[in-house]
Image (cartoon, rainbow, N blue to C red):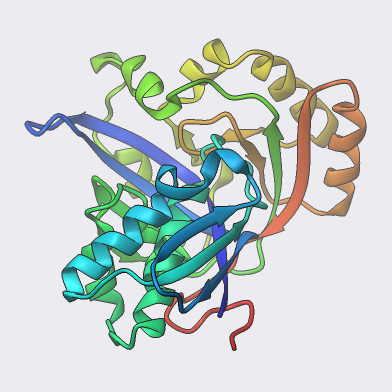
Length: 290
C-alpha cells in the first residue's frame, strides 16, 4: 500500500496564552498543499520503520510511535513494514513528521482491518502531536486548542502558493521558538476570526494573514531575513511564515513567481517550489495501493 503524506502551511497562527498543562492555546487556519512524502506499508512479522533520511529511521520517527500506539489501542501486535520517502523538507514548519504519522495511522487502520472512522483516527492522532489530527482531515481547516479542535472551512483547492524552504533550521526548533515568545505576542484570536469570516463570505484577504512567530523567526533563523526580503522584492508578494518556520510562502502564485524567486535566491541556501492547495481525505486518499 502506498500513501501520500501531504505538507501544510499555516495561513494564520495565533497564540492566545499558556494553558495549565504547559501547552499553549493556539488558533490557526491550516491548509494542505500537494508537496508530499511517500509511504509504503506492507504486512510483516514485526514492526520496522525505514526512511531514505537515515536520521528518521526506527523509533526516532513519529510514524513508529503512531504504529505502536494504534496497535495498543486495538489490542494487537504492531506488525508492519513502513518505508518513508521524504519529499517534505524537515524542520521547516510544514508538518512533515505529523503528516507521516497521520498517514500511517490511516493506512494501518486499513492494513490491519480496524475500519476506524476519521473521528476515531483524529482522537488517536491527538495523543501523538498537536498537528497530527489535522492531517487526518486535511484541506482548509480551523484548528483550535492544541490543534485537536477542528472545523472545516470553505475550500481553497487549486490556489497556487510559492513555497520557499531554507536548507538550515535550528535544533529542537518548535520548543525553542515557543520559548522565544512572551505575553506581548499573545492575541485574542480576532485576526484568525476575520480571515474565517472572509473565507465563509467567499474571499481570502491575503493582507489579513498573520503568524505569531514571524518577527521572532526573522531574528532567529540564520539568513532568513535576507531570504524574506529577496523573495518579496522578486515576486511582488509579501512572504508569510508557516508554522514556527523557517519555511516561507507567498500567495497567490504561479510559474512566473517560481522563476523570479529562483533567480533571486540563486546565491542563497533555499529551495523553491510551486504548490497548490488540495483537499485530501486520508481514509480514501492514496498515491496507489496494492
